[in-house]
Amino acid sequence: MTLTALHTQAPEDYINPDDGLRYCGKCHAPKEQYFEPGQVLFGMDRHPIECSCAREKREKREAAERASHRASQTQKLRSEAFRDVPAALWTFESAGTMTPQLEKVKRYVEHWDEFRKDGQGLLLFGNVGTGKSYAAGCVANALINEMHTVRYTTISDAVNRMQGKFGADREEYLQTLLRPDMLVLDDLGAERSTSYGKEQVFTLIDKRVLSGKPMIVTTNIPLNLMQNAADLDDRRIYERILSVCVPILFDGENFRKGIATEGMKKAMKLLKG
Ligand SMILES: [Zn+2]
Image (cartoon, rainbow, N blue to C red; front, side):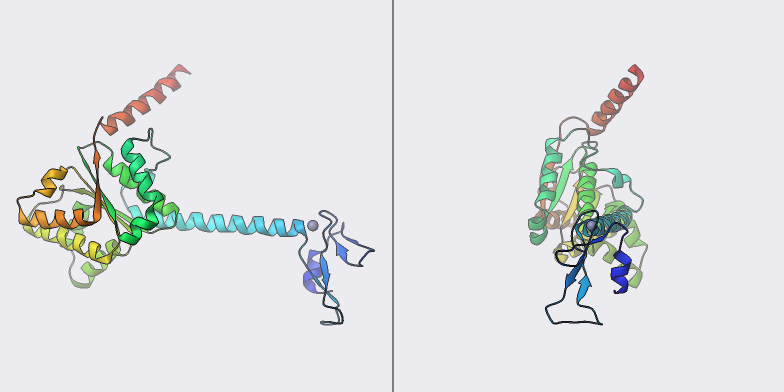
């Protein structure tokens, strides 16, 4: 008997008189197998094999290990993606209602492989409070669940960081925005609109486009203003974005008001008992 064989022995095992092999008392599958006729290894004519219940048990354990590994990986991806923004909690599942816009960005996730291959992203534009950032967060989280790397940042924050860094530091920071499979740049237009600031925005967006990886940009700036910008610095930024981002208009009722109403309904329900 090898050690392994001894290890897998259980009191309820029995020797099957038909073939002389050890069988599992639980699942009644053989726990041993003969070598080819005439073959002997270390004085043995047989070797241990897994019975059905042992295999099931091992597969269950391995699946649990894989699930736990995946959970810790996505946890890590999430903390790298969002840093200090609240979007880590914004998911399709937690959306009160699926607006037509959320349906659209969900289809973006469903066809991610194609969009990714083409380097195509989204431009989510519309008034304040229509759920653009939320929708971008939903995409980010859905991609993270599929183990893709994501970085979600406001453009203001990115510009401020780029302005405060030089040389290798700045390059290193830029790489954290260029490396991930998906980059979300939230709230274009809210950053300081100095010509130096615009230069930073252009550099970032241009490099991202050249990397061939998709990005999602959200903005309150109307699409027709982006398409007809008079300012040349603005125009070259917008042209870069519009060359790779599919515009989706966020309109209709105020999204945050909608959430408040949902929250109010829940509170009323709780108070009713
Ligand atoms: Zn068994």
